[in-house]
Amino acid sequence: MRIASLSFRYGRRAPWILSDAGLVLDAGDVVEVTGPNGTGKSTLLRLVAGLLRPTRGSVEDRPRVVGYAPERFPADQPFTVAAYLRHMAAVRRVGTESIGRWSERLGMDHLLGQRLPDLSKGSAHKVGLAQALLAEPGLLVLDEPFAGLDAATRAELPRIIGEISARGGIVVMSDHQGDLRSFPGLRRCEVRDRALRELDPIDPIEGAGEPALTVLEVAVAASKAQDLADRLRAEGCTVNITARATREVAG
Ligand SMILES: Nc1ncnc2c1ncn2[C@@H]1O[C@H](COP(=O)(O)OP(=O)(O)OP(=O)(O)O)[C@@H](O)[C@H]1O
Image (cartoon, rainbow, N blue to C red; front, side, top):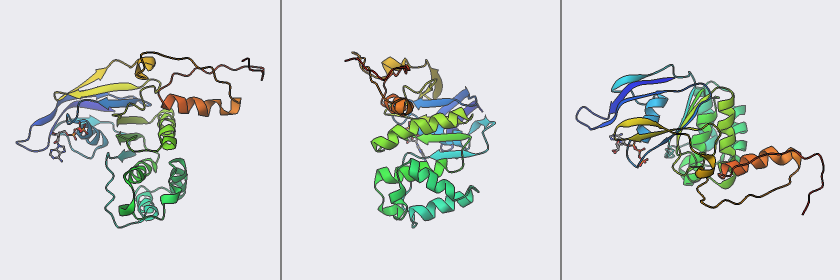
C-alpha cells in the first residue's frame, strides 16, 4: 500500500493538516503513528482507512478488507452489542460465529446483551475493536486502541496485531501510551508540522522507559512460556526464552 503525495485539509479555507505526505507499507507492517496533540494523527488514520478522501494525492493499493476502530466509539445507537455486531457481520458478509470468537478474545461476552448507550467508555471501546476485527482485515487501522482497556485485553491486543501481521495484514495505529513499543519490527512515523516522517525504530530497552533495568530469571512450564512472554512484552519488557531440559531450578 502506498501513501502518495497526500495533502489534506477539512475545507477550502481550512488550514492544511497534511502536506505532501508519503509512505510505503508492506504486507505484515505494523506502524505506530505518533506526534503532538492535534497535529493530525486521527486525520491520517481516517485517510489511510479510506474514510476521508485526500484533498490531493492518494492512498494506493489499499487492501480490500479494512477494519477501523475510532478513538471514541459512537455508542449513542439504539442497539444491544449483539444486535450491533450481527448487523456489522452482515454488512461485512461474515458469519455470526466471528462475533463469539472476538467477544471471547476481547473479554466482552458479558456485554453482548447490553445496550450500546449503557456501556462504559472502556466497554464501548471494546465493541469498536470487535467490529474492526470481525472480517479478518487486510488493513487494520486503530486510533488509540489501548485507551481504557483492562489489563487482560491490553495483553491480548498485541497478540491479535501479531497474528494479523503474520498473515500479511497491515496494521496502522496511534498509540499514545506506548503499549506496542516493544512489538518486534514496529515501524514508527510522526505527524508534525503537516509532514509525515518515518522515525528510527525504537530500542526495545529504551522503549520500556526505565533508565535502570533489572533482569529477572523466571522458570515456567514450557506450555505457558509463550503466553507469559507475550504478556510481559505487552508490558514493555524485553523477553528471551531459553529452553531447559531439566525441571530443576536452582535457588
Ligand atoms: N471533522 C473535522 N473538521 C474540521 N477540523 C477537524 C476535524 N477533525 C479534526 N479537525 C482538526 O484537525 C486537526 C488535527 O486533528 P486530529 O484529530 O487529526 O489530530 P490528532 O493528532 O489525532 O489529535 P489528538 O492527539 O488530540 O488525538 C485539529 O486542528 C482538529 O481540530
